Picture (cartoon, each protein chain N blue to C red):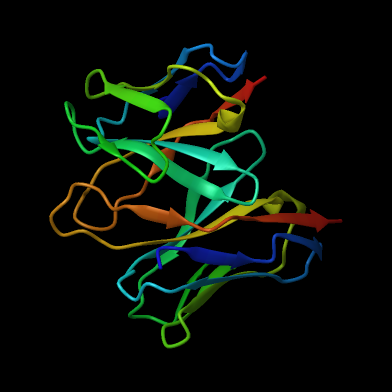
Length: 116
Length: 114
């Protein structure tokens, strides 16, 4: 029930196209859903995040769509660029009101390649 | 600010050897974490430290030990390395500031156990 599923495992998109990565979860207690971006040889870095009280969040070319009833969320990258080529991890956590940290469950990752 | 630093970047061990992975952060964060990353598995939490002087097991703690040396440093030790511990290890840190805490990751240590 703590798992976060992610698809596809890898994705190849033409420059200028839309990249879509899908995630699903089971635990309805999750209340924070970040996406991390990881370039080769680097550590993951927070890209964008959403809480379940909104259905969509947009930051520049990156949009998270959230479907609470289906327990699914997705990342859309508009006008994909070669510089977006990276591994993307969706994640879920339960925001703790007492602990000093939030335990994060990561999806398995999607390797995105944007070709010119 | 260097953020989160990890040493070494690469390491090759033989089965049964021991080693310590070092991690330091200069962001004055209270919480620190060790993850391992394996293909198709995402990042799995090995150990975490909510504050200086405290450590707790994560999802996959077997075969590892940790030390929170001070607020800045959090080390991960493999006492008797096994091939199953071949992985990329990431250290991270975070600080609660009233909302969801963002974890900041180091560049990773790529470990191969032969």
